[in-house]
Length: 282
Image 1 (cartoon, rainbow, N blue to C red):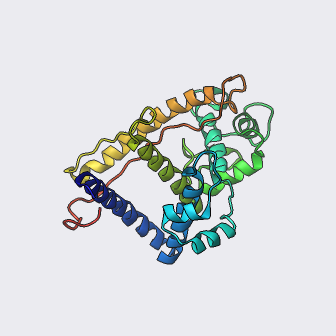
Image 2: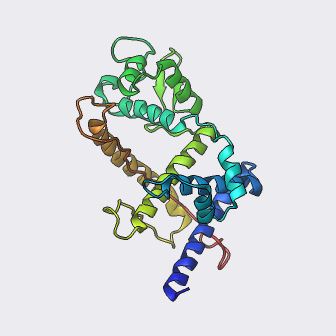
Image 3: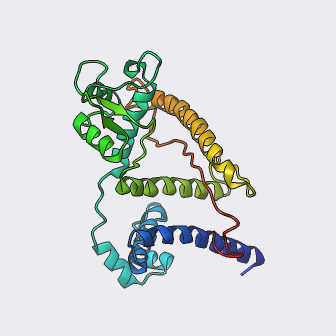
């Protein structure tokens, strides 16, 4: 192994261990033991080998999948014979609910005089929750959208039975399942962007930046949380308005080829540097 290859291998190992340390903590909190994680890792390796790493024009083979993944041919055949995990299309449901909330936030038809999202009656031709859902969620039944938003704590019913928006963004605060679905989508998007940017000679790099300081007093966190939440939400709402204008579901007049998913994610992070063991995973 050359010196460059060794340095790349060591850097990759350190990075993967750091990711796995955070992931293992989350998995153990939710009761997933190591053997279950290993089974999922084998499935992921095989799926990538059979699909993403397939040779154009040639049918994926058990032998090549075993060679790429390090699994035995018997393991590959066993995994291929097992049914895939059930797919509840959680991402699609998340996107529909997020569109409804975004439409409520920016569409003046659903605002009060000061320009804030107003409480909505469930039924009605215009300005109702049903009209909001039909305008921003395609053919999703309004009752199903309401049940989901109530379940995750994004809306509530007031004393008059109207539907009141509690958060300007769809975040499943009251639902562990919803939060875990976001783990699967958001972390996957971030890793995919980093992988894209690491490919030398590939397409134009995707935007990937962060700002961080590591000697802040704990007292500064509350103000930074408020500042980052306010400004990040305003920026995301501007991006949302632009994307909605170019999305065929939101604007049927849009023309063009192909079908692409694109967006921007923003998250805040905090870490107790002083409490981290020297040389330990962080």
